[in-house]
Image 1 (cartoon, rainbow, N blue to C red):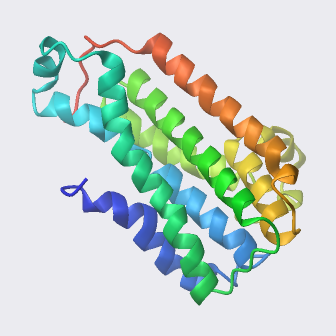
Image 2: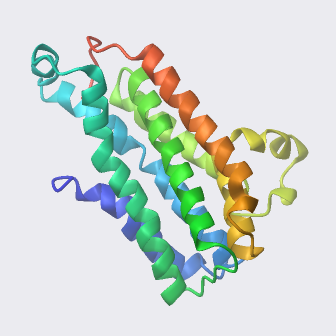
Image 3: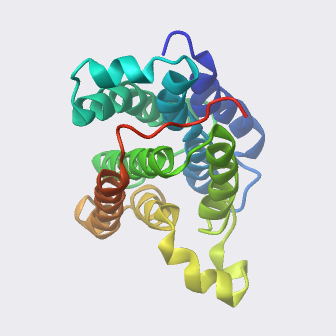
Length: 230
């Protein structure tokens, strides 16, 4: 992680700077802007998960990893753990910063906000791992991350009220994990909800995360070669 400062830039520094302009400019104010911007750049940051795997193929060290006897489960956990810390740090740092500088006020349960953030990070890690597993080139991965981030975040109403969207967009918004995270954040931040009030969205998010990890396990091939340079 020390050699990849761009991960911290994407997850924390750029969102922190953008919130100076958008915290009160987005409809709904900081209560919408902070989790919305965090989710957007969190999903843009999924490329870091793919890079953690693809980089070994580019360095020609993946075969060494395979013959070392290291179990695939250990490889996955080893690569995801530092990234999980970085994704969690995004919320640990952005929310207090937004409270101190951008006027974010949490009217409900702080623990509820934290649990929603934790559940969303679990989904992000699951989706990132699944993309790393199914993509065979870094170009494929980057394209899916870029398009997916815009669709999953923008189409879920995280940056603008969902009731302003066309009917067909509103109908499919529920398939986005950001829709459920934003539902939880709104209840806890703007509506004064308790932990019990956000358990529904949290359960959906953890269910999505579990599905992504199961699919990753099904499609994972330790011997598969991937193209880092394209």
